Image (cartoon, rainbow, N blue to C red):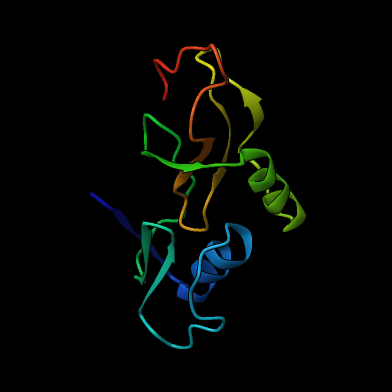
Amino acid sequence: MRVSYEVFHKDVAELVRFYVAVLGFEGPEIPGASDYVVVTRGEVRVGCCRHGDADDTPRKPPAGSEIVLRVDDVEAEHARVVAAGWPLADPLMTRPWGMTDFRVFDPSGQYLRITNTRAAAGESSGAGE
């Protein structure tokens, strides 16, 4: 199984810049006037879609969804996001269930949790994973 999701925004170029420059996805450097651009990172595909009525209000659960992106080095991902100047929704921290993560909103208002691929040695990886 592979993960693919689509986000909708008035400005596709802004979405692409976020996913490429802030989160390290691969995609066109300048998406042009396209209404749909796909960016990828590993097995994850994100369709960046133009929609004139898109609501970019940040949506934190339970009002919205939480998209979880698992990475091997969450500290390096955190450093990348901070260096890009992108605001954090929640700081980097180790959760009671042993996972270390931080959260951001993408330009379309999607709540993204960037987390390590596994809990620290000897800790449970239960709820919230």
